Length: 150
Image (cartoon, rainbow, N blue to C red; front, side, top):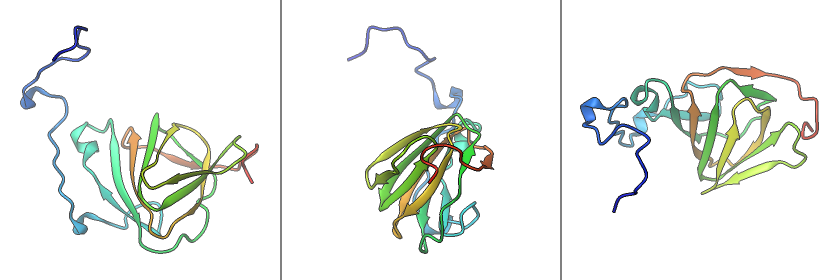
């Protein structure tokens, strides 16, 4: 049943001893807000920032009106950025990458922190989970200079 390798982490732990909190978040429509950077989507905090002391953030994001325009080139001051598409699709451009990258329902994108990108299109029914390391981060607009900037 067990692995013969030595554990990498302290455990087993009682929940009271763990560094993270147990976090059960049932689905509730009332938890979605429009308090976020994009006016065409709504956000639901999944509670990972509180559970991990800010090490990880996670949001459930869904479109509620058509995509108005590209986000513009920007980058996020974080160490990890993950997108899992539940429904619909989203299309990115990345600095230095010639072709657009489309993530469809069931697909996942692991975007390294600090990478310049532009969201150029999405379906009207987009729904996704976004995970960030750390939970709080800055977003910085920029002008593209290389391939993939078109």
